[in-house]
Amino acid sequence: MDDELIKNLIDGLEMLERTKKDTETKIENLKSEIINIITLEGKPYLDGTYKRCFVKGYQKVIYPQDKDSFVKLIKEKGIYEYFSQINYSRLRSAIIKNDLQIDKEILERVKVVKDFRVSLINIGGMHDRIDTPFD
Image 1 (cartoon, rainbow, N blue to C red):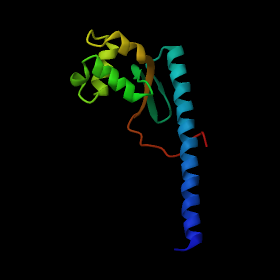
Image 2 (cartoon, helix red, strand yellow; image 1 turned 180 degrees about the vertical axis):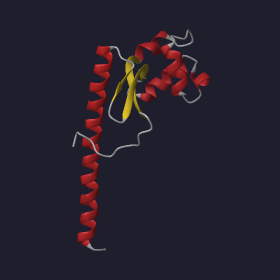
Image 3 (cartoon, rainbow, N blue to C red; image 1 turned 135 degrees about the vertical axis):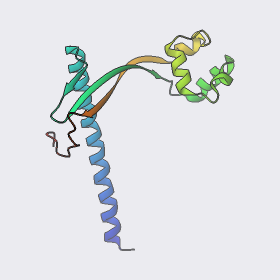
Image 4 (tube, rainbow, N blue to C red; image 1 turned 30 degrees about the vertical axis):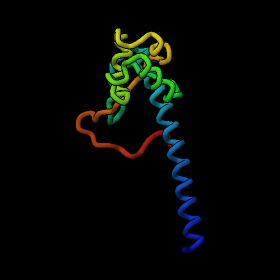
């Protein structure tokens, strides 16, 4: 295999990975700013030129980093079988609802924080745009 071709492939991948990371950071920063504006102004949505942006708050459960000890605790409390291989969706719902089946020790090991989903929809049938004012 041609060494120059291999270098170009690897360098190209590295450049795209870096661009992807930078883009993801920019997206998160924009979402954060939009969330702040919607929260401060109390509006249900904001309009761009081509898209309408909705922000919906929800409760997000953050599980402990050490999954093994958390699973062990759930087994010790006798609820592991109910959640079957830890169905995080059902467990999240039970935690948020403060379900009586969830032991206090388990609740103490997780955090429930407010998080947001940001979504865009077309306004008036406009199509997706590729250009952006953030380049």
